[in-house]
Amino acid sequence: MTVVIEKNPALGDAVLADLQQTGLCADEEVIRFLQENPSLSALVTKEGIVLCEARDRSERRLQRALAKRVEERLGGETGTAGKVHAVSANAVVQWKARNKPKSSDERAEAAARAAAADGETNVLLRVVFDHAIRAKASDIYIDLNKAENRTRIGHRVYGRKRVADEMEYEQGMALCRALWTMSASGQFEEAKACDCAVDHWVAEEGSAERTRKYRIRANSVKDIVGNSVVCRVRDPKFVLPLDAAGYTPRQMEHIAAVSESPGGLLLITGETNSGKSTTAATLMAELPDTQKIIEIADPVEVLFDHVTHIEINRYHEDAERIFQETLAATVRQNPDTLVLGEIRDQMTADAAMSMAIQGKRVISTVHTQSCTAALPRLKHLGVEESLLALPEFVAGLVNQNLVPKVCPACALDRHPDEKREARYQRLFGGKARHINPEGCPQCVGGVVGQTLVAEVYPLCLDRAGVAHGRIAEKDFAGLERHMRTAFGVVSKHEHAKAKVMAGEIDAESTERTIGTFLEDDDAGAAARLVQLDAAV
Image (tube, rainbow, N blue to C red):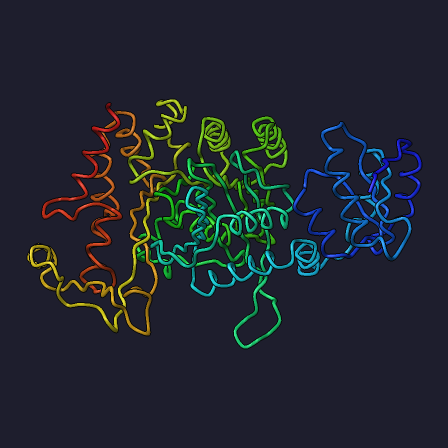
């Protein structure tokens, strides 16, 4: 067929003005074409009239291809099928605003977006999400390898990555495109880093209706053979009490003292997948609703009625300007507590510093391996040394890691490696129990969950200023000793050792996470290593 594009946008605008959502074409092939070509701004009516935003010639090929598809699908039903009318960009914007879904039901809106996506691929994507949630996965990995025509789906369950499924490369790409199409953030960018977020609804056990919402946050990066996509799976209503997470009563007392202090920075530190965001969410949940609490994060993972949540996309081209404007507005909001999702650069470090020294309570996270390592890390991010030593700035430090919990039903009493077993006998007096990789019906590969091992420095309790004096002197080993003697702080290794001897966690997997158990003062050795690292 010969496609003629009407050059007068006024005619197309007139058709668009009368068009409602219910008047859109519902043909699956036409919808699929539009979903596979998200750069094409177009609408198709039930009668087959194609309304395309007037753009440059690069869009004409797609416009003609769409018109042909519409004529093939609807040509026998109406003589107007495949006729293309140009419409103005302003008319499109106004139409979208006027026809925005009015339903306040999140499930209905999510279902509408899902229905608009590619049918089979969208169903497969929901199956992938359902499978991951049933497996208790915290992350979904979609590794696309174009050279080998393969897509590998993986799960991180209890801190361990495992392969869950495989498919062809193009099928995996279709999954990623569908995922980004379902989100509100735009299209999948194969050649560069991009993010998106979607809501996924699942049915409670014993029910057929999908009433429980999970938040899926996806990030994609290009690699040399394809793309690596990681999806973080979060229940936005999930809050884990500190005792259930694995903190000791003394540690919870210290955390409460810091979180209830009138101001200063509470910094939750740890490696990736160490539960930092979960701990921050728990602290937010415990803050009284009589306070003004603002969270600025990328992404916002858990929602609370008493918290003002602000989400900023760090990949936005104006991310720094938007952040600065948001922070300025936040100051005018006069919050009692500011929660910064993560201190990852000088901009966020400056924000934490500015609010903390103004007397505001600030809760945030940063990637480090110990409490003391957080101090040189802040310096590296641009915080002046003189400010690090101010009691008004850093109120408390928390460091944590997640380690697997041993299945009590099938755990091994002896390690299969005799050399390791002899060492563990010396360290733990024969009380250690070990993961059985064969597993049993009550576990996943010998693991029944995760618990954290942690150390907590309640700097705000040190009214004499000894701790901050040690910080000013860069005497991190002295800071560690003072925390132990003055406040009974235990090191992360000591916390872990107690759990190993209780048969709760596995020594070998714990060492891979936090480092080797030592027969002497391991906490002092760790502090000395941090001090040397900071001096470099």
